[in-house]
Amino acid sequence: MSSQLEPPRPIRVLCLDDARAALAAAAGAPVHLVSAPDAAGALGAGGWRALLDAIAREFPDAPVTAVLDCGDAAGHALAALALGVTDIRFSGEAAAAARLSDIAQARGGRLHPPDGEEPLDLRGRRDPVAACRDWLA
Image (cartoon, rainbow, N blue to C red):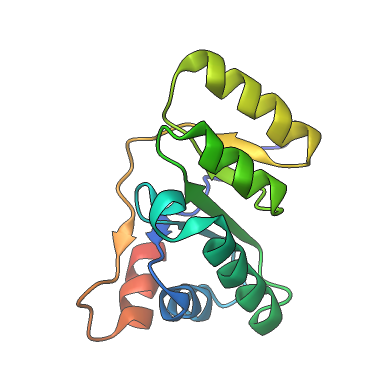
């Protein structure tokens, strides 16, 4: 029987520089990035997809889980899935969550339930890479 490792602690990503700091700090270890709450409505699925594409170009071998928060907006979650965003968070009704989970799985994605762990927020950090290293240690 194999043991599962704890997933890495989440880091909130508000921009590409935040993602770069997290991935630099992780130095090839798995990274769990999360968007701001309801980012799918503010940034949009296209903005998140562009950020993911930039991460993939700059860190092609980095093991990254990047979760877009769609709040309780099923339409935003569907738009994200249609654009190839594979990891989404949805906090809406249970019936809608079940349907979205099925759709995500059919597209090779995952629906992440809201969780209680607060991510590291890099806003105002003088050295975001060091903050990420400390957080991930």
